[in-house]
Length: 498
Image 1 (cartoon, rainbow, N blue to C red):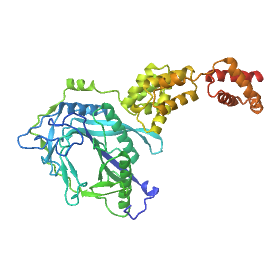
Image 2: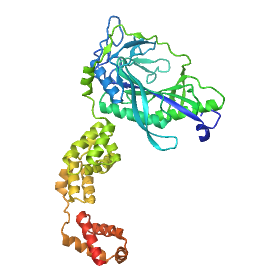
Image 3: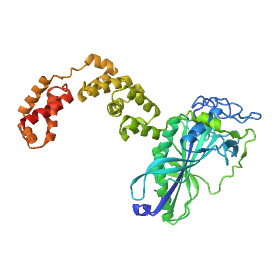
């Protein structure tokens, strides 16, 4: 920490952080925003380019209709109001990876405004609450190219430019300065990414730059009326690092103020190896981008009819889906959260749940037994040897009592060991469950005869000791006793002794 003052909890408590986020999201269209070049990550440098995205004289932009539809979908998913008529503008600045010398963006008339995202948070008393974070605007723009500062023999003295990314369609989502902690930042970004993935407008791959976040961080004394001077933390490539960078920046700024200094308005970069931010460039003076309406593009009109057509593509969003699944399938909130982690996982569960005797049993299998084995094997759900049909069969056999918990685990273990689906393993290794009343009663009598102490405990009113006898009989039967019948007979036998 480059400050002299030690930042104690008491000093932290004097200050109120204020955080706003700017999130850039690449849209998953087939072609770029204003030309027909392929919108695809990678490729040989400077091969996904044309006169339009290079800004060559005489080349004119033509707006990608699908990019507009994706922008509207994203905006509605985060509760924004759609502006029927929005304007594209030129944002003028010079940078080597921007060949036109300007970026086509939206300025004072963006396509969407006034949205919100709800996140889990804590109030002043430490109680869990749901907090609404405002979204100022969502606007459309194009991406710039990429400057490559390393990886070449002469990288010490030269920077290479790859313009493949030029013209990639983006939406920028700007939050209100409503965030107050690094944890709230993490929750906001997690929720935003989840929503965007559900809509299908982006793959949100941070490693490939499909989702990028800048955090504007300032601190002020609690009770102050004006926000402090903000620093912008840029180019952080994971939510975990963003949380760490915001935490560091809050403490750095408090340290500066406590030492009698002043926070400088600047852009800062996060160094994950050192666990700190460092100055990139001063922003004491606001940039004059000399915005003016893009002369080669007419106003974008997304009327009520087109909006209605676009909204037909909007899927059931995660929060609504969780609530419905809890009510419809009688599953726990925790299971619902796990099952709706991705739209694909939720779709697979619901398909299986509708076929099974007990959706709850399917949920339990997916969130515990199957997930545990997939994680241990380093596999994704789509790589599982046990298909959803296999999960349904396993759940139904367990629900009917034909398979005990132990038998089910053994069969699943065998399926993963041999890379075979559950029905195949079951037909070959089908365990013979003991459902003969006389055979089970004989084993119960044997266990009772060998455990006089536990019998006396049961007689003395400790009814929970019945579970001990069930466990001993299950062990004696090598897990093959019918669980429901066994429980019933154990209680009956012990009551007869009383």
